[in-house]
Image (cartoon, rainbow, N blue to C red; front, side, top):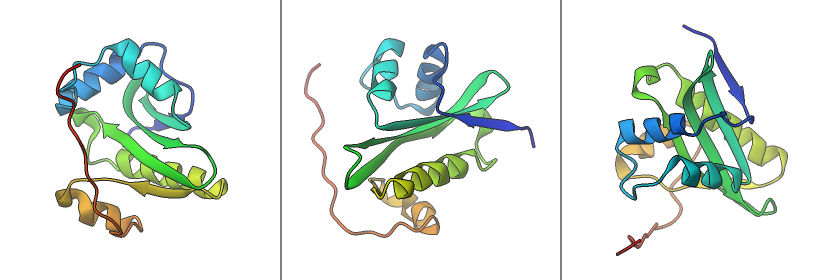
Length: 135
């Protein structure tokens, strides 16, 4: 398996993250590379995965740094899925939260529940969302 480098250093070009979002079908809001950069930089903690110089994954935590951290945006390029990168990102996000005594939480679709349970998460609440009607 190739060597993946994990870092908090953001990519030089967030167009690479936009490409991953579009490959995954995650860009229903039509976000720009600049908006994704702002999203990451305004997060409490963001972690990026690189294969050589190519961004292949990322994950982030939204938090006030005191009680709860919401893990979100964990993604891996389809070309690099199934290699443990997503799990590595998750474990590092969890470790960062726990080092700072912040409780890691997340929301996921029901189909992903078994994946997150293997990482120690348990169902505790009903999540709800309101989709934006216009932008």
